[in-house]
Image (cartoon, rainbow, N blue to C red; front, side, top):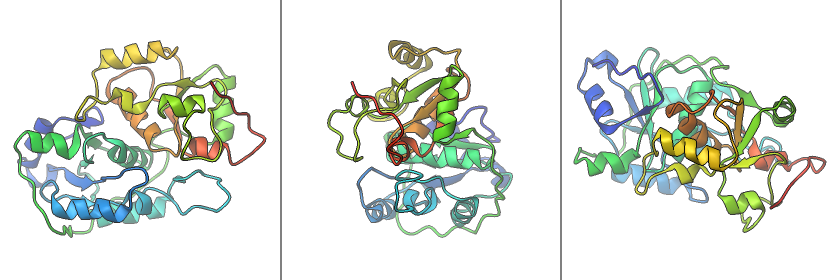
Length: 289
């Protein structure tokens, strides 16, 4: 079986089938376990304890985010440079002409950030394992431990595979009649219980569609019908140009993955700097409630 997915989300069965196909067509597996506020070393330690066979670990903070500039611009996870991503993907064994499947513990947050960044930089055949390691283990499939040092990859990146927005681009998107979806939990959208960023609220005109509300219990994305229902309940439409943001560009990538994988509406643009970048300029408007 040649693993050349039509969409960016693969089931456990599809990934397993790809791994027993011709060596040149087998997917490169990359572990991108990550959780907000968790020491990256803890994610690396979890990888050493158990991971999909042959999967290398990719540090979201080190590879999928540029260093913080110190003034808040770019947000808490600034868009990484081509050079940083290319070096990180090659170290994980990603090769030109071979598919790559990113996975995390279960929710897909870390894997979605990796998928979106890779897709932006032109990696064809990039996908996410639906349900992550938890789904793989629940299917009774083997895991292994220890350090994985793959043969270095040779992937060559080129930007422009997805639409990337900055703050000015978001304002232009809204002015042109596009819809803007906020992927953070609803209480943070309303400006309640803000414990991450120094300013609470949301971008005026945005709609609240929390990314994690589209994850089933135990991991894995809900189906297309549920996504459409959630978008409609949020006041959104399936036929309008869409942009997504969150706190720092991780949950936004997850919502972009969900919309694209489930075929809901046009392919969304992502404001990677997100709320943490938006509030770096005190002149930008803020809304609560």
